[in-house]
Image 1 (cartoon, rainbow, N blue to C red):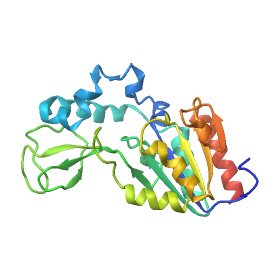
Image 2: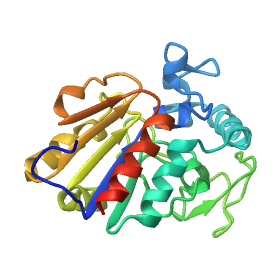
Image 3: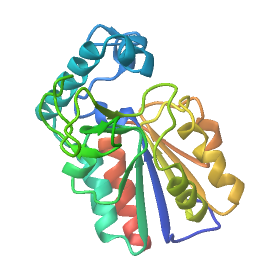
Image 4: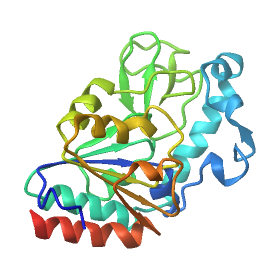
Length: 241
């Protein structure tokens, strides 16, 4: 396992996608032909949609925020938290997911490249605030008190993902890259495996329910439920550290 060149690691980067949260019951757009609660991506996940009908978009994210209270972290989330806590080195979790299941599972160093459901952002003062209730066009910004000004702290289609400079640094420094529950067709995250390969020293592992579109790019592939496979992988890595 892990190939012949490396027997231990110091800088691990884990990329997680919708598959890891789906095992906790979090629905995705892929569950129903590109629909989420009967909404099309174009209606709720673009800047144009928010400009066209901000009330509907706010209601949609209020519903998604409320539904987080009905799901719990699964063994894949807690395994990654254990890896962060016990590994003799650094473990960075980069997630495409907007839920807080990694944090609730015990993880601490989590980079949310697509934003967070539990936060809102002010378009007037650019402040970002924790927010766990319902937000609408009458909700005032906690800092500047303007309304309407708040929007979901979510990266919509057509917008630049967050923290890309930090992500680039972590990818360049990593010697083990693990992709968990990703489809392999959403960029820029789908290109991270080639980013680390360009550096030339990182081993790469895909953990996915089934082979992703980019499965052939990984040196090692483990297919099945993340909740079953990740605890075993973490045990292996901790024995090496």
